[in-house]
Length: 120
Image: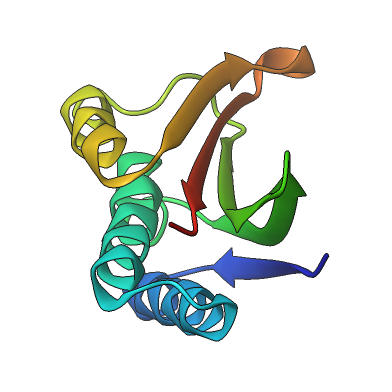
């Protein structure tokens, strides 16, 4: 399946990442509501990690297939430790928009958030 990496240096890049995710969701056959949810969740994730505001980051978007389902997976990493203080409420907002959200620590104290939206 295809994978894309979007480097985020500023707020315009956050918008570009959101638009790219929406474009991929549309191309995969997601309905308009799910396209909107995954696009909004992507920009919310980027802001929760401080991308565009305070630091540079990257969002990885991947078309996935699991158990006869297809979907989009969006991943962001925070290499400066835990997300900023205001990110916990933002991640709560992301949870209702996506089908799966996984938050975990990686080696070297990197923090990773992975979200999946399945095609219904």
